[in-house]
Length: 367
Image (cartoon, rainbow, N blue to C red; front, side):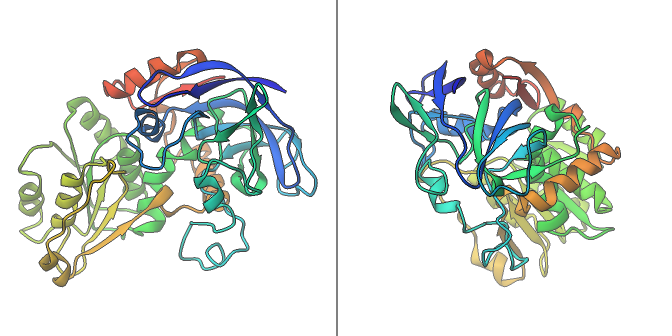
């Protein structure tokens, strides 16, 4: 079938919306008509050429939601008409990682995704007979996508797909990091560095967990005001005194939990230093640039601080995303306020411009 898609032809160049070919689903796969797709910083990160694992040409996009239109042989977990969220981090439910209860990094598909292919090592995308790579196994800047069923989260049919698509990456990364990766305890102090989509999600998750103090740092006064709406109790315009402010608030002890959501290695270091001596846990969620490294003073670790990463916030997509959608439907999570702009697929480059200007939190494309 012919579909319209936003193609990254060359790094650091605008995407080109054009017609490409999408093959039918094979065994274990589904065809999803994409209705909504968030424009995530990871898409811009790859398009810029900074991503060391990036490739082109490819159809970008990974924060998608839509409706299943067809399924391949053997598909049992989704059916035609189901509403789904696309998952760059799948959950087969059978591999050693999925059954461990300790990680969300499914081994059934990860390696192939990194090469721009589907699980069988091939692609369903092509242009003029020439195969094209899938981006993060998803490629949702398009009218439709072929996805393995293990990379689809079936959600409540009455949920807004514009809101649900945010749970395909950004919102879940932050919320899940607080709920299930850090497992924030009630009555504690949490500090969030960065009030974009991921950072605000961490604020939401910390509030849901019953944190007593939620401190947020960002350079944008507008985003700090939004952080207050989501549950921040203290906000500060970020500067060179971030760590000292945390110490001042905590009688010199540091925060029980810190979350880094900027992708800046200097801020990552601050998030480690601001964690409480003895048991403070720093969760790093931002993606650093090519070749950058994180310097941590060993003394900070020897005295008990802990550091962890959190791809997709540690969420198991097919298990946790439907739960988050149900929480949204119940009014416990406000996803709608994250959406700053809605626009057609043809305006994808405008969405990137808004992101670079920090205009709003999330743009949703409606292919």
